[in-house]
Amino acid sequence: MCGIAGTATFGLTPPLERFPSAACAAMAHRGPDEDGYHHDGQAAFGMCRLKVIGLGDGSQPVYSEDRGIVCVFNGEIYNHQALRELLARRGRRVRGGSDAHVLPLLYDELGEDFVNELHGMFALAVYDTRTRKLLLATDRVGKKPLFYSRLADGTVAFASEMAALLEHPGIGRTVDPVAVDQYLSYRVVPGPHTIYQQVRKAEPGTVLTFEAGQPEKARRYWQFDFHDDLADMSGPEAVDRIDALLQQSVADRLESEVPLGAMLSGGLDSSLVVAMASRRLGRRMHTFSVGFEHAAFDESVYARQVAEHCGTDHHTYRIGAHDARQAIDHILTHVGEPYAFPSAIAAHCMYRLARQYVTVVLTGDGSDEIFCGYNRYKIFQQLPGIAPESAAKVDAEALAAGDGGIADRYQAVLVDGVRGGIKDRLYSGAFRATLPEYPYNHLRDRFARTDAGTAELSRVMQVDCGFWLPDAQLVKIDRMAMAHSVEPRSPFLDHRLIDFVTRLPASANLVDGNEKALLKQVAARWLPDSVLSRRKQELAVPLEGWLGTELRETIQSALLSESCLDRGYFAPDALRTFATEFRPENTYALWTLYMLERWHQLHTDGHHPEAP
Image (cartoon, rainbow, N blue to C red; front, side, top):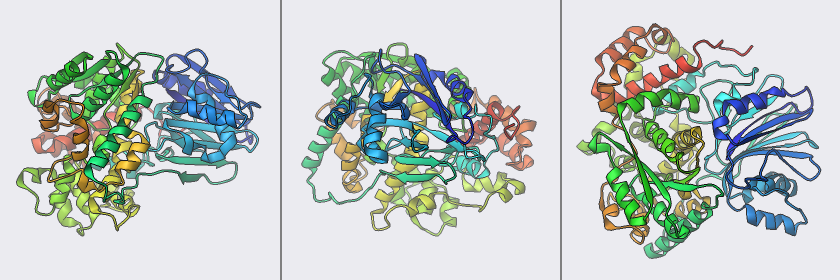
């Protein structure tokens, strides 16, 4: 696991040699153990490494035998031993002990298709000095981040984190108004957009290629594909298959030459991963959870019960409002963009705790997206006759304004940041004029890429897996873990498990309002009834209580500041009224607005809007 950065000029001009080292210094938390660099007349690469596999002989960059191909890589390739054998059969000898060393030889053998052979999580860059081609690639589900920019002179720069990429002096900081509008709706900036006009995110499961004088080429080599072609499979057969695939996924993620543990919230997903991992390891492992002073949010007692059942050495950290206040700048610094998921506060505290004991952790993330675990899926199915207890979670104004199509109905359920009616009240005329279309439902483009002949719930889940998972959940996991130099591994996001589960009908997982029906049958083989029977609780924080008490003054001060009122996004009088009223039903909107303003204070104030 590491951070990577680089620039390619394809031999047209000398590459900026100091950029990779400056970028790696900006993200040294991703790789505090070692750094390495490459520079020639065509490209300059760098990496900072967190040592997990190949401790003594896993340095990067890595090369082909003739050094014509250079590669830097962030992540873990779980089948690297099998790939070594494949290359050996082709007469290629892999030098070096880490998984990274198979990559340049595999690319040399298979070309761009080499990514199809990789099982794991990765973002990588390959430069071929012979063909003067740069290749950037991401893992199938987007676990590892990669930001990039193509400058006016054709130079390409890339890095694992936004702050690292912005070390390149040619990249400007002009904010993208479309990204701001999307962020305010979803509390994250969906890829391939970033908050800056000149920077893009490499999307999941994608190979990008760059050559001098040619436009970039993007090829999607894998994607979530929810179809019901296994609808006739029996329930017991499906459960057996899920059990076997998940066990294999957990086993693959236990390879480590440094201490390994697991996150354990006490919920179904992390509990099942811990149960499988602890049995496979055959020894005690460290597990970690967080608790809260607010009892309604505190799952720590359940986590400890599972820890006792599995025989782990369990550690808990109790979070208070002071932790939230201290975490805000940490979150925005490491994400590099506006990001308003309060659960990142809990993730920050959990990974900080884990780093005291281990370097690698297993997590239960990804299960909700593929096993139909979110409560909003039930709410979506209830529309338009929404149950009274769920009505508050639906944007009724947006629902009424839409045409009844799937994108508008799901938008009304998914958006919980600044909803359309609040935008109408707050947006300034000048900001609206910068948007190509207002109002615009950005989910329409996502749903257009799904199969209209598939069940609606399956289409909703496919959109979530291509957007919500990589741009919200996996951003939180990667940035908060790597900020503390911890490598997270998510067994539920193994593509072989995903390829099987997404061929089952969504109705097999959401049965009479009971979510994750198949996974619960698997878990019944591993966990006590007390874990299976209790109500699902997502990792959350007591935001409403904190906003109304300890954080209220901080948020109001920011939103009522002259800098915020003058940014141009909002009509000043409307924003003053909204921030002063501070109504409880606007909790998430206030938090979303505050995190945008605080991001500006940290990242744009004091910076010239364009690069020198």
